[in-house]
Length: 114
Length: 115
Image (cartoon, rainbow over all chains, first blue to last red; front, side, top):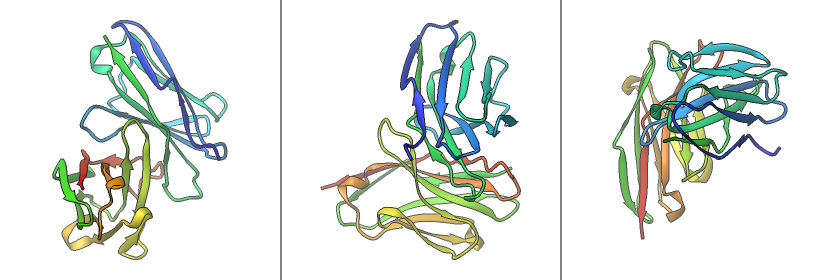
């Protein structure tokens, strides 16, 4: 068990650019979650997948955000036309439906939009 | 809608003193409740969870929490603080009717431990 990994750990981009983050969940976990955490706040739910199906999206997830989990393993989160308000820590978590609601978090990707 | 309120954005205790971090929740149905800890530049680590078994839940690193339905509370305690307990602590709730299990977090409490 190597845990949940996220890449890159840090990303600095200019406003208007597109960015993509990757999350590799714990291998046997079939659920994968994305959260966003701004400074001084708790994480906010963005979206989640069960296997390759995206089953829920938060209203926080604007049209500029898209997430995929094409083969039910790793996931990507893309932000198009980044804005300064997108600066945050993006956290990925995974879980297995057999272990009730216990989510394991990755270290996060910190995005800074200049 | 579910929500979580953590009373006190910052708590400071002396090493060896009691740690008490407060969490109140709002939910129309009995929820599942969690405490997570976050060290600087790291992800969140689960400390403990309440899923309707015993109301007093013991977790890692000597922490425990008690679910009190009448007070809608799930406060986190530790009898004796260690310097290594300094971190950000988050209380979270999940609707047991929500099969997806998404977590709703409080704003967090930063714990400082003085020598």
